[in-house]
Image (cartoon, rainbow, N blue to C red; front, top):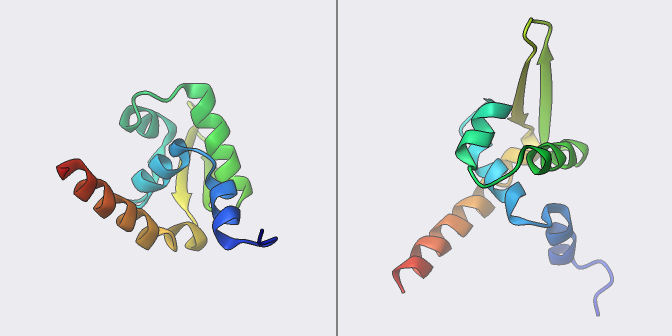
Length: 101
């Protein structure tokens, strides 16, 4: 077994489908929590919050809080997050091919 397998590291970083869906949506630019929640209808608020925190901790996105009332928070991909675009595009392409079968 390979000790430092890059595929294993990547899978451990993402862990579940929600992170891919969040990254997919943020590829189009900054989004607020409510926009992400609306786009990913089946995710709970708790799970969305947990996944956003994990993605931020892993350096894939940033969270910007604006000093307004009510508070405004936006999420955006970092350069590292945007580097996943080819991966997301490949998954999308594969999914489209798979759906045809």
